[in-house]
Image: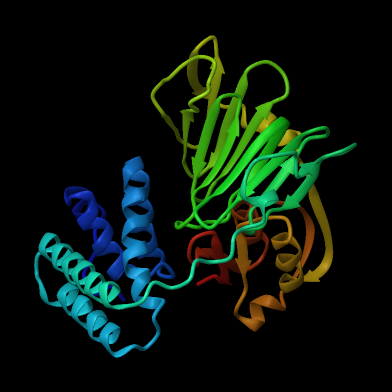
Length: 341
């Protein structure tokens, strides 16, 4: 449980850095209610995600040093600051102060650790295409657990490193099902635009006519790259069900034709009287979002039907109509199937 009764509106009233620290110290993302508060705050303004990453980077410094006595003391002080102070604003400020000062003192006394081994050049920077779909639509597993579905003839160039997950759509069309990772934003460059997301599902088309970006789930920011032929412009944040078209020097946002965006990659699997554990395991192979079944009795329930791949939420809606189960959030990109009340 949270050490403080978090509320989305309270978080919105706090300065961004303080809200990020408060959420990092208190939110249990396996709790659906707390996860919803965090998601609402992250989606409220683009800058909130950057503040969350900074808070995470600071706090992660505590976790990387194990049980060293100095760090155990600093952990306790930060937690007590979050629990004892009645005002959310002062709670966050005190926590940030304890973490930043304590970590700064510790780092000043600690030897600099060796740098991590370099990422192979073929992965760390853009070059020749790494993934190419020939002859048919293909779905690829990316190094971070994300999925990329490519239309025939499409090609992707990967540039993953310790700080980010960068992809360039060289040609064609791709659908991305992004595994959540707040430490490393996921970016796709195409047609003079950079699409940025942390965990979401979207379609990018660069095969005919102007660039089109269609958002299915989550939130993405679309910004012009420095070398964009149509010059600088303001970033555009897309909401689900919206499509951005980059044409004639303008970024036009309009309602998306979601059926068209899904039709080219439509795949499904048929199951005949199979246990739910086997069904979810197979569907998980085709999606970055994961279905979790922990109750053995629920896992043993038998299921027959044809189900679309790559859309765990759709599966949850369908299976809840034919079996006595329901779905619930189980953390970023994870959905638990439990017995219906």
